[in-house]
Length: 137
Image 1 (cartoon, rainbow, N blue to C red):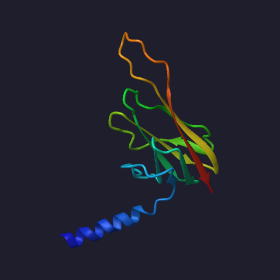
Image 2 (tube, helix red, strand yellow):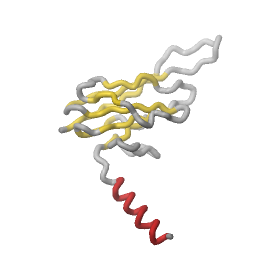
Image 3 (cartoon, rainbow, N blue to C red):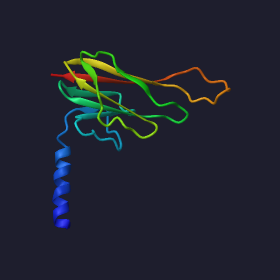
Image 4 (tube, one colour):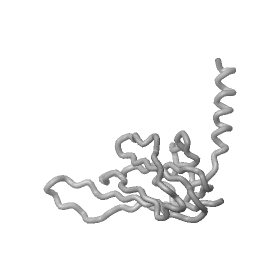
């Protein structure tokens, strides 16, 4: 059994190394979902990808904060929103997907606010997530 399993795992690891695109650094425990070339998480600040590639955005809610809301591209002609087929996420995780349409630069932003108990004073601030995505030809 080990003789079959070991080569299969090695082949799978080698195939995974061929993914194009980079984030600002490794995102622990986050790998691109099926059909995506790149994953961007709340640990990333920049990413680079090529025209036609797809990126999955995976954001984790911080303690005492709501889930991230309204993930948007600043330039949909460069980075257009698409349907994420894996959009069913665990509680506290926000998923979104985008496709690189043309060379250029776009920012993906999302917002979160504090969770407040009913009838209690609530701080008036918003957390902002921002990642700059550079799309090359």
